[in-house]
Length: 275
Image (cartoon, rainbow, N blue to C red; front, side, top):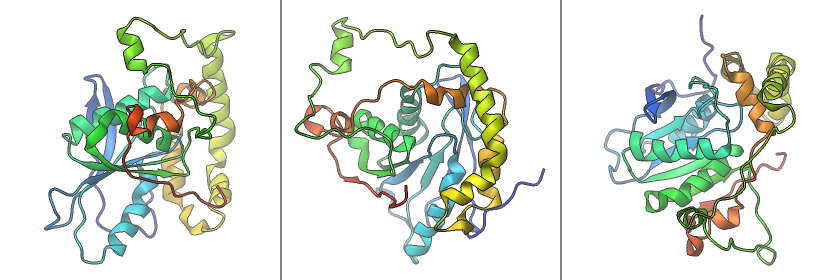
């Protein structure tokens, strides 16, 4: 089948490699090569998409970054498909944000070889990027949270954890098991996900028109196709249904506080007025 091509994107299309995460799951990512003569010591950019999206979400942004740079060569840019989304495998797992956060960490260390990077995430991808930055530490030179998910508590109300999860685990003090669907179990979650896919995804183009109300030209056929094809893959219902059972997130206060073992580096937070 002919794949739609997004309008207003760079003719220099990315390459689309496949990697095997954890020796088990096939995951896809996009890589835009660095410009000729770019500084090899400059950090790369790693982009993490939002829920039910894919790496294609970032193509227009990458084109704009290169256009605004003029003739200055930029370092490589990476955008990954989170497990269960886009063209990555959709195994029958219990998906949580901590699964995806671990994927981001391993991608930065293994696929990118530990190279310095700036980490950028949108929506739930922002929350994942914030958590991953705390684990990656000095490898991350900057963090960008675009219309991010995650909880930011008032500093006066925030109570730092008595003990880091890592330290509690080493001491044998484990948290109570997370039981997201105790009543009807996984079959009910799969049925919910399948119903959601059946109800919403045929309307993806119309929904995108509303989401991109300020710039409707950005809601093109290629973007709609990228979202819909991920939802039509086997296993997608379980992934989509997982959005209803995500565990409680660590507050951004914790993961971004360098003195408490968090990231502690520079953070940029762009927020759309209509988001």
